[in-house]
Image 1 (cartoon, rainbow, N blue to C red):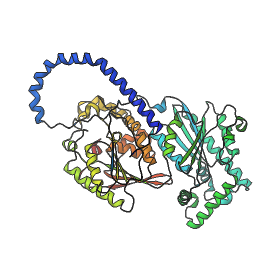
Image 2 (image 1 turned 60 degrees about the horizontal axis):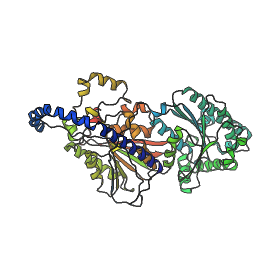
Image 3 (image 1 turned 180 degrees about the vertical axis):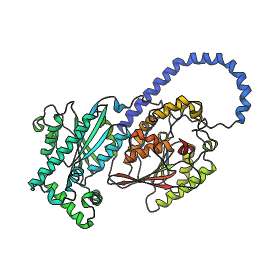
Image 4 (image 1 turned 90 degrees about the vertical axis):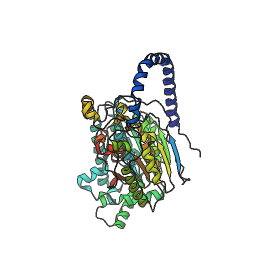
Length: 537
């Protein structure tokens, strides 16, 4: 099978190869000195090695794993339903982040949504908020519909949205601009690095968009305004969105058929005045603001096609790949914690050992539960890391033919020089190091080669979460607790500073796509045992 390579992937690979070449050149320069030092020390080390060889052979030490990798995420081939393994374990220098890139440059951004009701604007808005929050960028959603309901207009029928209703139109315009003012006030308070506020309203007319531009043009320091229009004419997507809309607060307690009729009438009222974004709006004479660049992005049929104009800046460079991935189809992401390994049973931290007997019992129960829950659906794709304990659980799941994708970025957090040591060693023998971790669990990086912080792990998971957004069927992720925390934090929109302390229950965590994002539910597994890290980390 041949898989297309994205331009962004080529750029990432080019950077990785350049870094690897530089690493090897430096290694060659240092080789003579290193060899000389090794020769000088060889005589001193031979005696100690011979004395300790018997002890080393008798002691049980865990297998240590070096996890230094650059992910290469492949496109899935939906036409194939048999089992495929894609292992991406090539070594490459790791990029360490001493500072979150979102905190380097100040960039206040306003994303103004555009489009008819039930076109996925709110869902895309929340997906953007989730992703930026995951990257550590302050991001907030300001929804005009929520403000309308807060002002006592909950349950307003279709007549409130009639363009011929002058009083209602005046109220709608005021609510929209008040919502924008609230967004800009919040954006002014975020002075450290990047920040993004999303103005979630219909903004379906040229006049409204001019008003939004005029208001943003008054800001100092200037803000970067981007219009994001969602266009949808796919009847299957629309019917699914209409059904989801019936669950919002405007139709609480209403009979379904009556609510649907009223909502469709509301859509019809907006269609009467709807003016899609065109390039003519970008002409300075049309905007009325010579110094304000007109930026816009259009998504057609939930990401099947995209049009962008002027979408520069750091935040948009991060969001464009996400918006290529996000779609409105129903799906489920199941996060499955790995079972107890032999290293866990012996009380060692990390390493790459196989499952213990308790871990095998736990994995069998998990596998049986997953197969029961997908009995009426297409087999889910399995994403997992490269460790033995993941592969053993994955093999059990693969009694049912399915695609399995292995990526090292889903491996557990690497503990550096503490990898393979007894759990509790850091607390009792390295109290200063333990205190540093307790003071800042997000940015604390474990000492030694390969040691990672939670922030490092979050940044290496960026491509994975985009792949999970892109996939059109259910996904099972087999991982350990740190990765599970990060993924749960992403799908729930939890600030990254809280991710290291998230509670993750042993068993299966199910994330089901809903109108507001993803709803979470847990399936406890009492039999067997899970990774030691899930209990103590």
